[in-house]
Length: 437
Image (cartoon, rainbow, N blue to C red):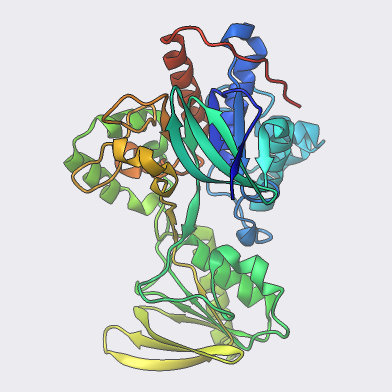
């Protein structure tokens, strides 16, 4: 299929993916353009393969809450006066007083998703949904992105590219998804496909998502047995204490980027329990209370198979046979289950598959990972038409906030300002005025 050149001008910013990270960037660009003189405004366009804004819809379990404060929204840490803040959203929805009375810093995940949709709608004129970038290459003084949209291929041009391609499911070695074997990212999308309630569910994983899936299945299917399988002896609580939370501060990004590789590894190891394979203490205590009360009643539907690991999975019609090994003794138990859910985490999608020929110009460290400057720009061996920026996939250079919401507002502002600074250093470029809803 031949790609058709777009009639649009060469944009200053072309964003690939439109989740919270590039949404925050679109807002940062819009707020700059509100007050900047015409010659200093930025032209931006974003491409998102989903048909509408979406952020982990498969895990929008009713009642689950955010793990970060609402003050770490799309804008507040960058611009506390922004009308794109979570508080501005509450005011627009006539719920500000109600939320204050709720006395919480952590809204439900469903409400926060609604906030993100509200913000995305206000910048919708710079987003092309249902559009997937399939290739990126350089051409003269700009990049060209080949975009599949509406059954056709289009070529869009830009001086800078910002990749925010999100996360993908991480599975144990050898694991395969199927009709009755899911990853938790697809939970709510797939649960409605069940033609009858499951009799037994197996959930693999020891982190927040695993605990949430376990609680959800136990609550949703009141006749089902739910088996939680993990190699730890128990769920570990997340360290969200005030001093530990400083690892997510904007200043911590400066410290991490300036550190030696050895110190970076130490910091990641020290503070993994703030984010990885940990669970909110309230949820741990809720699951323990459920387990205890079921023992009191003599009808245990929630089974905690701790210090255990899945050794074999055999697919069968309408279900799956799961062999679980108890690690201390090697004893094996076969669970005849209707559903197996891997809640085994996510990993950043590889941005290099989109870079095409430009990948050979990117510098890598001794482990083959992309070298990334403090402003989130990929370091290159040769001069490129502009910058390639990453939102995500930079934990090895920027620390734990690489793909998290905690620092999204500040990160977006830093990328915007880097693009502005680098453009001002070049000969003046004509820029159109961008209008936003």
